[in-house]
Length: 428
Image 1: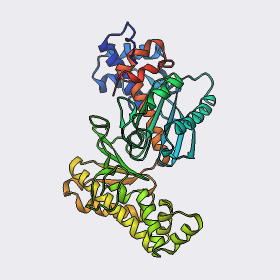
Image 2 (image 1 turned 90 degrees about the vertical axis):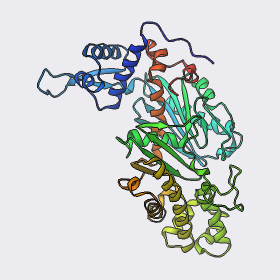
Image 3 (image 1 turned 45 degrees about the vertical axis):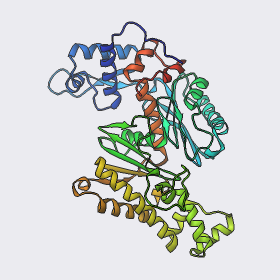
Image 4 (image 1 turned 180 degrees about the horizontal axis):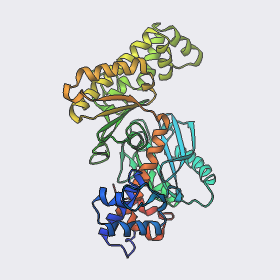
């Protein structure tokens, strides 16, 4: 599918400055024409022309007079986030979250339910589309749908919008997820790894606001990391950056990871590993509370281990401590290599803060170099389960308002009806 050529009337340099001005106003930190001139390095006439164009296109409007700084007061500029809405979702190994957002990442509605990603793409996406359809029906009157964003729990080739050999997603390899959603809703769609969209959510709306070097780490059923470098998401050459769950941390051939290798961090320290080892502890008689759960329900979950550890169960405490230590060792290597200023921890296992995170912090600070760890902060995610949905919204908005993509729809006033935009390689 190819993208039609951009509409005539705006030269490339005009589009670049248009996107620059729009991005500054979208960010919320620059609200007046003089501030745009000062901060962006554009001429006063250029800024005035771009602001006027963006007002005509319905993307920004002018509000009240800003406080005077000595000269004639200027009108405050505001991004019109209400001009369109976005369908956003995060798919995990065992849960599905969907939401309806405006163009600025404000969620109108959010729903969560259990799912099994191993059921395959047809069943899983059919349910996702049912939930999306319900949200579309509930969108604010007269507000068009502008895009779809989705995070998947596995490696995603971002430019193609397809998962590639995802270890915990049997049947999903090379499935055209992006194209399916774009065609169904007749809007551009973008698909990324779930941890990448969570990292974006924290960067724009969470504890990572204002950070330039950030590492978001999710420790749930699997383990992954999203990397923010110089204030931008770093995906790597193929979109596979941050897949730390499959870093080898132990020479042990007895435990096979779902990726097919042995010794992987995820297979030894993730939620799946906690559930497996918790069940083993219950069976061996090392944990009375886990044994009771295994007898009553027939299984032990990672959440069961976390709860039992919080109640002082010795075997569960040991499992969480080991998990925190192993994850901490990998993160210490990343701190020495990448030198982030902030590590944000998310995911179910990270909720075991008193045990898991204390051991993780001890290991990271103890094994990192003094300079790399000097100002490093390790925090839990304040957004919780909203990080992925908010990040998916920012992902779509960033793509839509990039100058390359903007060129193809700006003069029509909306990207609605343009599913081809997401397959044109723009802003990848």
